Length: 83
Image (cartoon, rainbow, N blue to C red; front, side, top):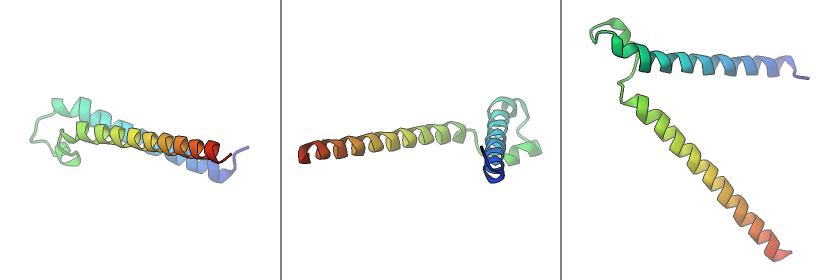
């Protein structure tokens, strides 16, 4: 059973994820329909970052996963040779 701390952390992560989702959705879907001179544009980064940030995060994530699998396979091969 989850403790109060675990539940608080879980709800915090859900809230953080939802706020990122809402921000990104407003940035990509709603902002192009609002005039450039409006104050709301000052709360968002330039639109090019809407592609650069997720793309670089995905590449970095795949790199980390690939490194983990590679290191695990090397360690497994070394254990088989020593046994």
